[in-house]
Length: 135
Length: 135
Length: 135
Length: 135
Image 1 (cartoon, rainbow over the protein chains, first blue to last red):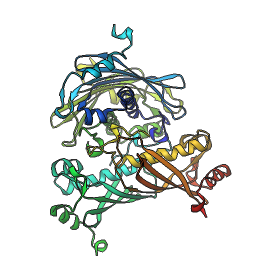
Image 2: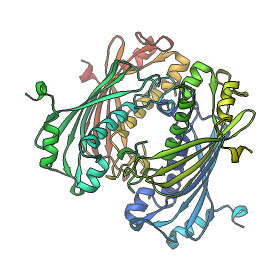
Image 3: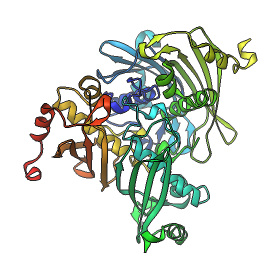
Image 4: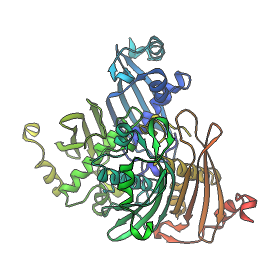
């Protein structure tokens, strides 16, 4: 992920409010990668499935700068009946800059109503939760 | 309009790409002011009328900073059969920072098809085009 | 705070990543209100004091829409030796949409080094921590 | 360039104000490509050279959607004594969505004063202006 001039604030580091934005792009990218190219846009419009956020928390451990690419590691950490939790770690030049936890609920998009995810989604997510964390 | 820390880039002035954003907020505010509180959101969802942009051009004459409020002057300058042109001038502390010209077409929102605007809209816009410019 | 068309995503509510942005604008506005107009920009450039974020967490309880103004309630909840914690609650039309907790550290801006805040800042923050929470 | 959910507005296309942002990212990417990885951030901080915008104009010819990657073609079209003009065309799935013209002036960054660019920059830009347009 490229961090650019426009992402930075006058302290010459990425503006704090940009960081959840990067993390959400990374989660969207995770879905695209595992759903054959479908991100939130296609999930909502083509699959009638929403995943609104109910929680996010982030710890910031080092500034994010345009000096290096920002690598975001994304993985699911928990799958509930109608929710999923993701972890996103942002790393630049080997240094962890932030670490975040994000909880989405699954909804039927056109009804904006909570609902268990389709079986396909459940399998995709479950298979990618690291063993130590799902056990 | 408040310009804040997060709007600025490392040169300590508002990032260029933020300025069209301010100008569009100002045009949206113009509609809200003249349509009884309805901006683009309500125009699209409640009135089924879209106003997509077909052109924008801006001249930047002074940096925009968080030191002063940004006052945006907005007025329509031309009304065609299916289009409207707005001028937006951004002023800080008495100095014009940018001046822009924006052209929208009127559409039927759910068909995304060009269409003359409702008579109410036509009257509202026409009445606000300065005389020297409409003559 | 006005929520506009451009803040919304295709689900027709404010995009999740915009919400920390609103909350940060609100914290910046709190400083402006209590520091005679000085927000982060002036704190950094004129007072050589930074307040980088080390933590944020948010719970989202209702969608944010352009139908209503977004009122953000901001108050400090804790003051440490070199840190301050803020609470920001976002309310629309009487409904709480999100509630967030934000931790900043105080730094000497040009050294990017943690440091206790000036006495003036300490007094301003302490006086505004609600009694039940500081006791 | 990935266009994502968060870039879209409720009409389900990229919000107009995001498009200059994409175009500026593309110009920054052009510099990075031709200056050994240095974009605006490094130009300003390491080379003490600014390139503030004095003009932008864009024509929007088709909506930008998350259905396809957005390919931005960037090239310089004119080099003056203290200014440079770029063209940016945005293409999705073979369709041109927007076409823009952007004028920057070269400055000595820490003095915010107009100045001819270094000889290296002049050569890099000149060599990339298409012949028909520079002749």
